Structures are given as C-alpha cells and as structure tokens.
Amino acid sequence: MNTAIKLVLVFVAFFAFSGVRANAQVLKSTIIGSTPGQTIGGVTAARAPWQVTKGRIILRNDGSFTIQLTGLVLVNGTNPVAHVAASLVCGGSGGAVAVTSQTFALSVPEGNADFSDQLTLPTSCLAPVVIVQVVGPNGPTIFIAATGVNPSAGDSAD
Image (cartoon, rainbow, N blue to C red; front, top):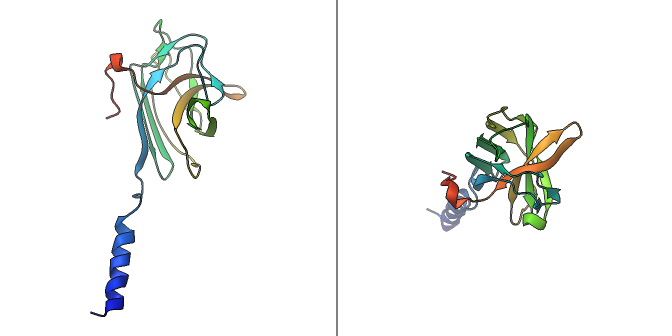
C-alpha cells in the first residue's frame, strides 16, 4: 500500500476516534435544595430552605439536557411551586447565567419532575452549575435547588 494512503488512513482513524464523542456527557450531577442567603450566577436563593429527596441532571455536548427531581419541597414538606426552569451558570457561584431551559412542570405538592430539553450551549463553560428557578409571570426568578452534593442525603448521580 502506498505510504501516502497509509498516512491518510492513520489520520482518518485518529480523528475518528479522538476528541469528544458525539452526545458525550459534559456534566452529570446530583441536585440539592437551596439555602437562604445563597447567590449563584447573580440569582438569589428562595427565602426559605428547600430539600430534594433525589435529583440529578445530565447535560451532553450536543446541548441535550435531562433533569429528574423527586421530592423538591420546602423543608416543611410542602411544594407551592408548579413551574420551574433550569439555568446553566458558567463561572461558578460568581458567574453568570449562560442559558435557561424551557419552563417545565413541577408536581404540586410532591415536587417531582422528569424533563428533557435542547439547550444552545456556550463555546466553553468554566465551573458549570445548574440552578432550578421558580418561573413567575415575568420568567425565571429565585432558585430553589442547584447542582451539588449532600453527603447526608445518600444520593448519587448514577
């Protein structure tokens, strides 16, 4: 086989199997309830503490986004919120909201949701955080949950 053809085949194989796979997970995390006084990406937390029985998000490099929430309620066990949206914050807690999902339903009073959306991702996102925001008449407002860990909850992103 010609050396030039061999080199072309090597380069094709290299580029076909290197880099980020199509549809690869770029963020997978558990979700925890918010605590009053927190601010993430310029968005303030609710004035009352929230908890999550189980929650996780998966964001893929093509922008596909899935969020599953079970028991997103106030610590007193109630959920008065029927509509929420998820926002990707880049730059950690001091960063800024880069993109927000469509509004989705949060069951009342259980606080459950299983939602998928297609997001337009920024070119890069250092220290990504996803927050779950209450949606009012004028759009997303305060946040009631965010990606994070709560060792006492025993939850996992798997």
